[in-house]
Image 1: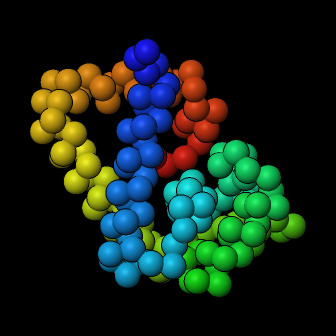
Image 2: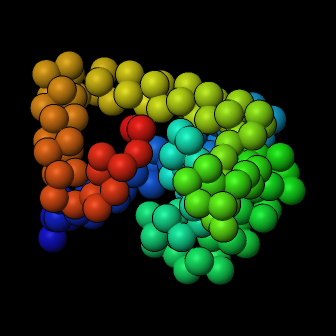
Length: 147
């Protein structure tokens, strides 16, 4: 039985995610786990509240808090007061987190080039356009982050 589209997208996503994690480990970020990477990847440019991170990662607030604590101890993120609400805190990338993000984008670019070489530029452009269109109906956080 052939795989459905959602499963095919999941397989490609998991491949990309693992390649990015392996690349980060090779670049000196060997302490990062996949769960931590998934949280860090969802941080907005100006920082995110823990509740927003938990919702976008589809984990409990407690799980997100535990992962953020680990990331903070390792120097990837820091917590700062939210300038719009004195009671709230924002999780923002620290220097080590920004360096890891740059390394992750290196592998994303490499994957993009590999997939373009495999599919050809026209099919890759069509895939990118189709996935962008699907995001409009599948991503409740579309437009809320600097993607």
